[in-house]
Image (cartoon, rainbow, N blue to C red; front, side, top):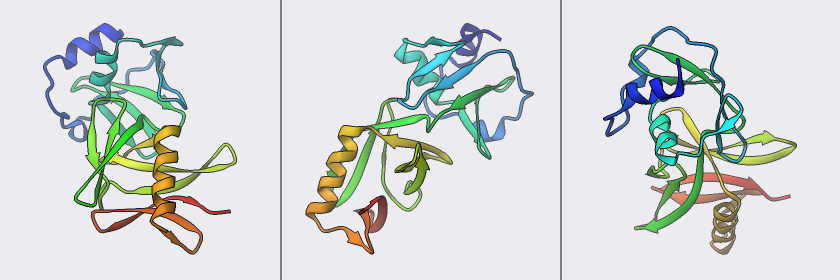
Length: 176
């Protein structure tokens, strides 16, 4: 299936479709990649159309450790180097932290959308659940601002740096 055909099958979607209920056969032959910086590629070529990337992000599905673009009739594997979403900004309102992604989606850090630390390239970095079991990573600018905020508020517990949102602690790093 071509990238155009996938896009045409998805036109008209307003919210996230029920991808968890769709279980079509895998359609191999295309190569989708989301690299460490959150850039999308199709058959080794960058996808530059932001609206198309936003559309594709609505039909991402994660099964165990594998990602797929899913329509009611097809399921295309997507290689993800770190996480599909990149957190590019945040806002604080009523002691809650609202995060903004690069894919036109905002959400609150809460008990469902929380953080965890992973080891990546010999460094520990935080990932955050964006929606369902799909995660995002913080861009450097946002990450450093959040670290500063945690340090200013002394959000440290046993050398673990965290944020507080929705009355929950959300790990963002370890102090060496």
